Image (cartoon, rainbow, N blue to C red; front, side):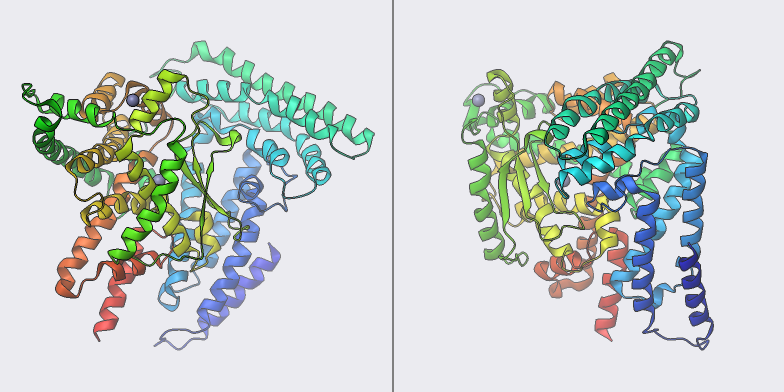
Length: 590
Ligand code: ZN
Ligand code: ZN
């Protein structure tokens, strides 16, 4: 901390010496870069668990006890760095540093808000879970096994104090987060039993240390089980509206969390209204296409008069065209070169041929999470491969596999490839790595990242991908409707007391989703807040900005140039990218 204070003083001195009519200060960027490096190093000291998860392993043996002292340390950290940040003038900084400035400021302010106002450390018992902190040390092979086990052993010592602090913190928890905490903490024994024993077997640590680790692991397990029992005893007394807090965040906290987490140019009310309107527009469009497709699939059978029934029937029919268990991964793989070719032919954006994407089966330890996902190298491991994980269907019986394959049919599979890979998440990542910023890799804006992927789905179809096949458009609309419904759902649950039945009706009837998917989503929406909004919010911001520029620039607008310029700012909030792009345009005119 001492070093930091000296540094702040230097910065202060520098600014004080400036003439009052200061123009751009050339020394600001180097000073800010130094500030960032120092900030990140200190940040990892405060959040060693987070550091561990992004591949920074200096503080692996530290388990922070979540007590008052640790929260005070966080608040002190926030204060110190907000002060230092305030010594810089945004106007003096490069675009890259301007957006980094915003991200750091948002991170610090949201931390303070979380501790003092949201207070989920009191009402969310599932926040207390040492699973990742220990599992990563056994599964990630970044260092020799003995070194990792040694850290594991030191870290174990704090587990009892960790759960004691957790019990002290908890006050009027929600029922859903209490149940989740019980389930998840119950699942941790595997790490301290079989996983640990297997690792110890292969280790060359002295026998005495191994014995000590096993004994401390037993103590840790007892602490975890003690926490589970404590929650189980608390559980019967919890009544929503009385001794338990509602899982619904309520208007004020929701709006604040929305602002911190999404950093959007829209308010929650604005995006909710937009989503409602979009849902109606989509239904109208979908009914039009379904009417057009009807004779092709149903001949002269009478067409349902109800719009929703009609759409559902056509979607069900189209879903029957799908891959098999055996061809599933292959059909994803063979799509990628086709997407690249389409993007080149249509001149939509530059794709760097030197950054290949490796398609692989989702590894077992991450299986069951999603159908497809991008596994990008962490900020401290930039040269590692980027993987496109494709879900394997081994865990499904025939009936489940059929339902899965129908959901991820010929049409939706292409949209997933666009979203996850090209030109969605993977392409965005390649671009963001070109303006390297550790800050953006760590605090990157999820709203922009998801928004971009959702935006590209639409953009590709607009440019003629899929030959304007009405079936493709219908299935795309169904897919897009999911993002729209996520927003309506999240907002309505936390602001408008939407019930589970209403939520299921929205998703299954109006959103054409399967029941299992809809029930899973309801659960997710009661456990999280705001996150489900980012797909449609980010999409709307990017799409609206593009349309705004089109109008402004008229015939000078170029889609390729727009995409490349937009992505060049890295994973920054769209509202700041918009600001910087508009500024650059003004400068270009002069
Ligand atoms: Zn089938
Ligand atoms: Zn995504």
